[in-house]
Length: 272
Length: 301
Image (tube, rainbow over all chains, first blue to last red; front, side):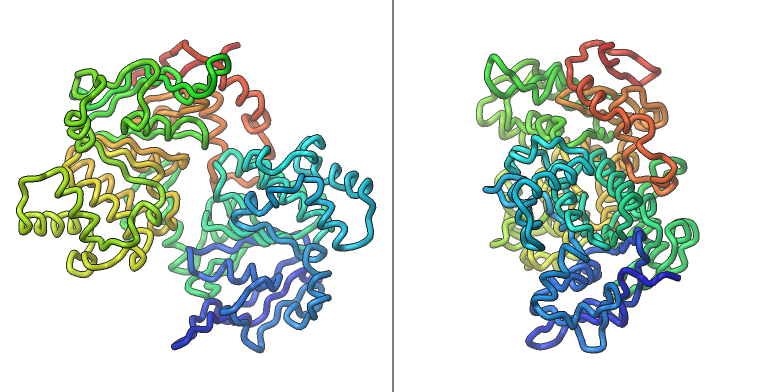
């Protein structure tokens, strides 16, 4: 087997409190292979976003990664990087699309300037070269180059989301983390964006860590899926097995709580 | 079917300048019946919430009229409007912002009782609050003194439903009531809405962009695009045999674990998104009947 892009080993993250610590992530280990689409599912509060933030070391106090945890990207432990190494590491090796990514663009800068900012921060580049690169990147996500001179508020939500994804791809990262990237969008736009990501990762070869609570969507697009429950990774398997032959009781329960689009409609008594 | 409680008769709502009108709702007609759930589905910006606001009388129609228990609702005086509003209640999308953080749950439920059932004594109100909380499957003793921030999203949405039920409404408009909740909690809220509809003979308008949950709760469904209802009918008929290209587009985009992305690859409707969007946004006055209780508006050729 090839070396994984991301290797998480015995990851423990606590939210430190004045009386007791909250164990948000409990001894989680998993690997993501190059070019793989890995899904992490679970309900709010299960620790999936905490993991996403930890991988690019964007977690903030009171979140504390316990000693003994390892997050290996390209063989290096992300937790040991110095500030300067970390600055170079972000965007170039791991880029992240946040849940409300469409609102994470700077409202007072044109789209072009936002591309330029990222490119310039990671190496000398002329304004003209940056514009050429930005045009190329926008083409990947199916946005006309004229949009470079637009401001974020002039673009629709789906368009802004695609622009953020294009910026994330600017430095050819090996891993793209997407934390609920499409929850604020309607299904048609969601589908357009995810299909595009799927095409791009096959073309450009980056791996994806995809976080959502929508299991149906996850099975459609992921190669492998991990299911989280209260900070623990309770089941990891390829997507079809998670769907057709779930092993853990919680995975089965998650499936039972999803209304079906076809076939028998049965009433499910879920807990609240 | 019995007579409708509430009906929209060719209602339009126009925004923007006279020379460049934007139809948020265009010739919208539908009816709500006691004990039946009607789902209104469509993407953001399609006019779903405009329809809800027209019903709630937050907007007055620019064309067409609202019929309430068979009579047109004109420029109502404040008394008539209050009666109308106590027959109609709304459950909102966001249970985190639709409850007042500075008041207890008890206050939230007592207030509508005070305003709309003025004859009640304090003891009767207390009894009514207990009954409401039991109805939505919450423990009255435990919940009453709490503040909204002490409750989970699902519990809060149950409070929103209890608050809506407090005034004995005949119609409930639920605007995306589960989209902010975890999948594992959604089902409980949908079951509750279903039970309330059946037990209290409520007419329910369920607004959503999630077709799978619409199928779970609704008897009938309407698909809205660019202010128009492009297809409507019995929920199974519409979903099993969608006729309007936008309905098909919407259905093919619903997350479906049985269809891997590898296999579909921008197939069918998704490849024609722009074309369908442009065509579907034009006025489509024709109505074509597919079968009993299934209609759609053919797109202009």
